[in-house]
Length: 139
Ligand code: COA
Picture (cartoon, rainbow, N blue to C red):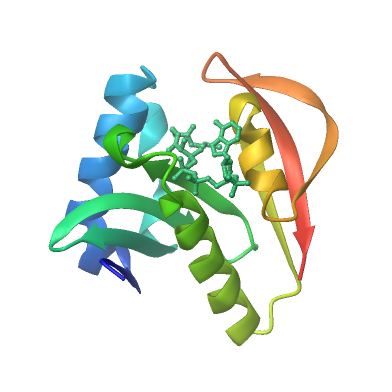
């Protein structure tokens, strides 16, 4: 397996996570900088996927079982990297005896999360001008 995954605090992984989230959310999706960074980063558990030593994907897991900021660099999409990342988060949560996940999915990513067992909840809403819907997974 050419990819490795590290998890840890913002202090440990901020540089890598920031580089991916800047490229994906701020540059590609035009999300304003002040919406991207919040106080949750300091207390979340962060995950970064590496190709050799190069960070290519990230996500964060909050204390309330919310998964967020899931991002794979464009050049690496459609190759199972996002799935690998989500499976690592799910395994971590199982180790911690967590029993469910929730997330706010961009509508275009519904099928991605459904392929991991998540179900949509309620109706769509706008966040940062992007259509979202809540999704849940019981583990
Ligand atoms: N639409 C439909 N299905 C998708 C999809 C999409 N946009 N992206 C992935 N899938 C499906 C794949 O077909 C695959 O299913 P399969 O195993 O049956 O073939 C499964 O989801 C896993 O795909 P994978 O290759 O691991 O996904 P990825 O590495 O491309 O990552 C995202 C998916 C959504 C994380 C990635 O496209 C991304 O970073 N997008 C930009 C940021 C973003 O929108 N993040 C989500 C915020 S909620």
